Image (tube, rainbow over all chains, first blue to last red; front, side, top):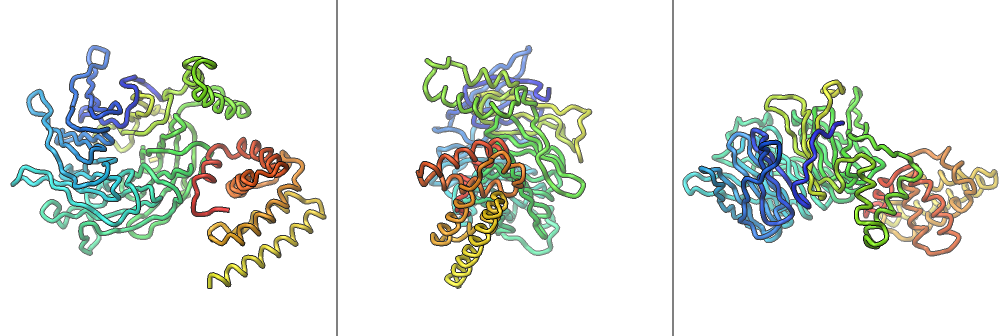
Amino acid sequence: MPAVEVHQLAQCITCHAWSPDRTMVALCPNNAEVHIYKFTMDKWERVHVLFKHDQIISGIDWSLRSNKIVTASHDRNSYVWNHEGSEWVPTLVILRLNRAALCVQWSPKENKFAVGSGAKTVCICYYEPENNWWVSKLIRKRHDSSVTSVAWHPDNIFLATTSTDGKCRVFSTFIKGVDTKDSGTSSSRDLKFGEQIVQLDLSSSWSFGVKWSPSGNTLAYAGHNSTVYFVEDVRNSPSAHNVAYRNLPLRDLLFVSERMVIGVGFDCNPMVFTKDDTGLWSFAKFLEERKTAQSNSKYGSQFSEAFGKLYGQSRHGANDGVDSLRARGIAHENTITCIIPLQKEGDKIVRRFSSSGLDGKVVIWELDYNTDIPE
Amino acid sequence: MEEENIEAMILRIEHKSKKIENLLKQSKPVEALKTALEVSPTNTKDERCKSANWIVVHRAMMAIRDVDGMFSSLDPEYYDILMKYLYRGLATGDRPTCDQCLRIHEKLTEKAGLGCILRSLADTVNTV
């Protein structure tokens, strides 16, 4: 079984993030709080509640080296939380947004973080030691709709975004005084802050879950039209490869290795995509085997589940839908919205990762050591 | 320029229509459907082109008797575009058309999955 641990930690989880040593998990139980759970004495114990936001928290990221938590919320603000003594001390980051913040991620060097928002903008935030203050710099007038996800290139300069206008874009986030000229980018020309490197117009519907491969050569994102897009050689001559699959759309992706991607979304069951020797990506399998895979009755049963939910529990019993999902042997019982790697630092291949979703579960997955993972 | 393109497209659809009639006379309904679905005017906004092509697709679709047999010779590359036309057919509200669309829809969903439905519903740019 690839799902090694299933933890019911809330009714619904909007996002989660792990502490650097992977012993604690921070999650938002679909409200304005962040709950930090620690695994002690073979059970999960809630050790901290971070409460400062006014509205739902849509993004959490926990930095690996500096041990800081950044949160982004629908209340249009971010907080950077510092662990001082036994308390988590928040620092307000004024993002200067007029719509909700939707996603957040620390840059690889952890000197910046990026926030995507419903105001069609991306905020790049960096620390100013003179003022003890996080400054937000905006990339404006580039997106035609909400920014649903952000992903940092390993070079700490390039940032990829997806948006509900269907496009995926890559920007330079070079900030004078924070980044040095030799920090990563091999391209000779000077890149200004906010300069658009490439715009990918592949999906005609919302796009989500952009990710870079570990080397930063390949970019992947999911469309809301049950298609996942892989783009090779983004910087020089981008070449795209679309994979349409027969199931419900994905919300988030994770590169397990240079040639293997796990996608999670509305199908409740993670999907595996692999790249073959000729460079073609394709859908490989579901991470969990469906136990009752009778193709004739499958859609019928899904529809009756939906009807069961619509017409109330009186006719079908309270947990009808849930039970049939359990019977199918699926760890998640609702849409999965978030997938996070759990590898040790320096590992080339991500064999452990966790996912959370609308069913309020955090599921830890482990790929067997004897399964073949193309590097 | 745009106007010329549309005229060329209409001509092509007329040509397609003749070809389909011939194929139907030779009782090759699946070949006719394939021809109808090929080079459909999806990325234009011109309603005339879209309606003209829909009439052609509709003609071929209604001639299908054996739905299971159809799928044994219809390649997966046609699935997404066929699904879009099925929804257009269902939108007409015409009884025989809807019956036929639902019959094909059931089999197509089995073959191409819910993803195919999602692709046809989510696509607001390439419409039929």
